[in-house]
Image 1 (cartoon, rainbow, N blue to C red):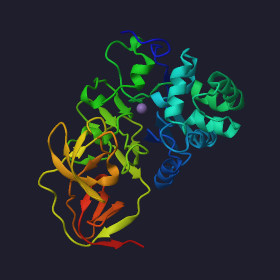
Image 2: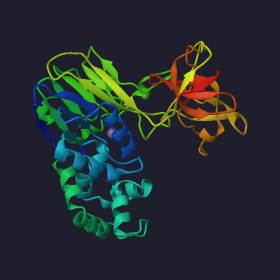
Image 3: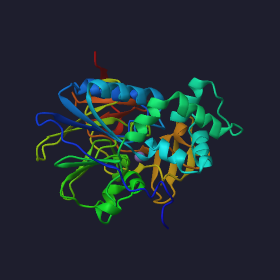
Length: 366
Ligand SMILES: [Mn+2]
């Protein structure tokens, strides 16, 4: 079925040449998590010599969309920041597509998103009875620079060696690439289109590509020349924001830095990896509760029959469960970990971007 306008609109492509000596950084899927973005930019010592690509989904789902947008707009005044739209940033085209009820539905589902925060600043109450078109008109008048910034952004930026696109490249010839298909291109690594240039994509949290453990680090697919960088910040409790660091010249010398807000600790006792484990993730998270406890419950994953213990607070009333794993991390004394959860049985931690359980002793880092 053909997509309705504006979803069918051809992708807006910007060609850009960073200065030859510039370090290239790529960040995606900030989703209104301003503290992750500022924390990460501090960590990579983001400077005027760098070029920062923001590969879409700057907004929505997280707590501070409007502040994050304003921060990036301000940063763009003094630094080289190249922002391209993801499906969650496409506020202007979706408002113009003639279906305000879709936008209202989205707003009611995510009242703390960009529009909700604009309405909040204007003192307009959000609810099913609101005059949505009038509220949008008021917001567009009051937040003219913000709307203009979003409307001006392309959905794809191309340099001599690199393509930055939120979801991925659609099949078919370039003049038929549709904007929406470039942004909302789910699970791209499962069907990625090979291109001469390296593609830097976000959109699909990278942990969803792994089966038995949770790994938030960028995935470099050298065969198809795609790097997927969405570390699940704002969407996953143990997520992180990744900054991919790329060479400006042709080359495959990629590194990355990550930021998350979790406290750091030092492993004191050794622990071997679990022999088997499973990762229950969003979209495939129906479970049967076998034994409900106050802190932990034993569940059976509906599709696979795999049984594991999960935190009871992760169980949802509709029979699904928050993302979780029973993976036990292989750790040796001296390893640095981030503490995501402290429980009576042990810790749920991250080690170098991989999440799992640790049942030994931790020393606090000063
Ligand atoms: Mn997205």
